[in-house]
Image (cartoon, rainbow, N blue to C red; front, side, top):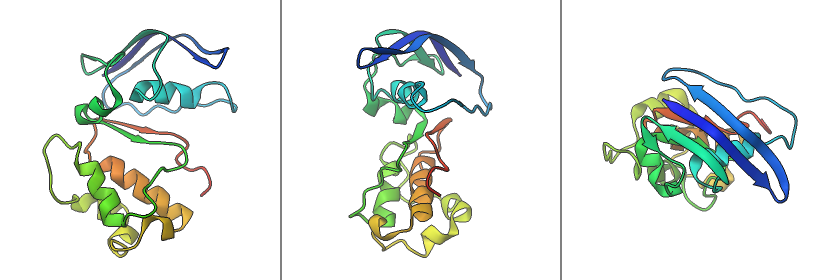
Length: 163
């Protein structure tokens, strides 16, 4: 489902990803582990198109992602929860969740009930601003926003950090 071939990336002048190759089949659960600064977040940003790759190739479900703009990746079924949550603090919980619907290929208009089954606290806080939630609630919101996409691939960058 996801294939990475010969991926090279730099952080400034530092070569952080060296000829990386990885094949992830559908249904797999993978965890990237390593100390700070070894390129885990850099790899995830490359997968999402948030950092251009220097060389190599990324393919998802047969679609070449390497040069595809970031905004075209979510509609392919790739959900992303970035490090630090990146919710919209001035928008309500409901508005934050509905932003994820924009990329859903089925063009849903309502947040799927599954999100509230997984994170029941969000249903009770739909009209609260995202910035007024606790850190753990914000993380649930960020994950819920990615899940409304109904992704085939879900990328979580440090999902338990600061909980």
